[in-house]
Amino acid sequence: MTLSNVQPGETIEILSIPDETVRVQAIRLGIYEGAHIQCSDKISRGPVILRRRMQEMAIGHELAKQIKVRVI
Image (tube, one colour):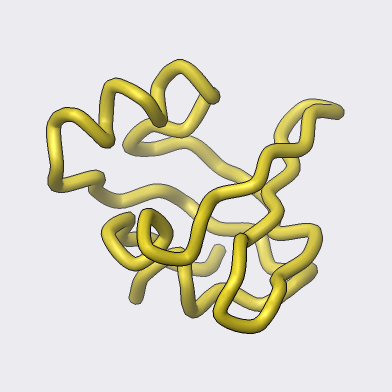
């Protein structure tokens, strides 16, 4: 499953970020393999809004399709 398939309210674990450039950018936002993050909102064919430790961030749809996750 990819981040683009997550629904609002679900808590996910990041499994893999295949592209190294994307991985470096994601780490700067606190998104890394093993991180537990909550989806607070999702805009159809648009960004996925994630919440982690009182911080919200928007991940674009194309980037979200590259990040593998599982619902916990």
